[in-house]
Length: 351
Figure 1 (cartoon, rainbow, N blue to C red):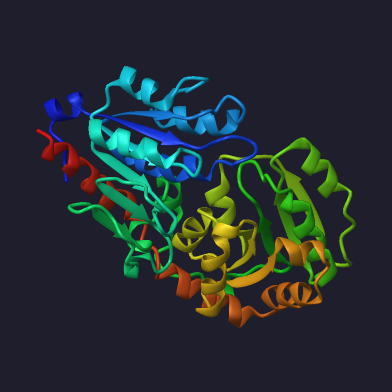
Figure 2 (figure 1 turned 30 degrees about the vertical axis):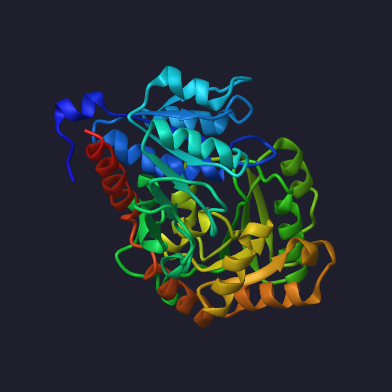
């Protein structure tokens, strides 16, 4: 759905996102995908988020032509009033429920949720999680719910790397190329623990670990590899999609990046690092879309089961081939287009 020039000039979408070293940048990254779709349609987009402490994420936002408004100590409602948006997107676990009602009274509102909205009122809801299309949460009369992986938000750099068909076993490398990353901040310090788990599994691999901070990089560098293994450490990178596409196995958290990995057709081992990831973590493993490697408690407890699951993923070429085919078919990369259409329709309804 295209936006006319005059209409685009008057449209300004404000996106309110949680962000920071403690809460990560998952909210920012999925709004980023929607934001760049809107910018491509000529819409002005402003992200209201505390990105001062995560400069790498701030650079990703600005690079896509999205402005940044730091809320500072101000009430987010005051910040939005100054911006005078035509519609508002909220992706937050921290914003009080009552604020959603205030925002909806003033602007068309899209709320990103993970499961039950828990009283957050909006005109449009987006739950991009596995199975969310079948949810029956109570939402306001007249509101619309966009649920499931058809609406998963994929950045354009991800979609550009999506293969035309799942990667075949014959395309794999020797030794196996493994990529491990756990978000832009790795708030729970998972990456060193997973590198240790790979070493314990003992499979011959060439492992590249993305360390979110210098401290994590130093810790990973001190982990001795098993015989036949090589461990490389790099910092946050703009070439994540290319690294995923070139890897035989990806190890990651079962959060928002999961659907980008599905879009790329990766063979993935997930770690559940937060309570809100538990449902997707269990279901992805049960549906044989990915391997559930461990929870944080299992990583900390030196679980023999976690070692066995890692060893199976790294050692079974046919398992990896089946995982790639299954997840590649689940996410087509058109989620931002579908959600942008629905959001801009809200703006038109207000005219």
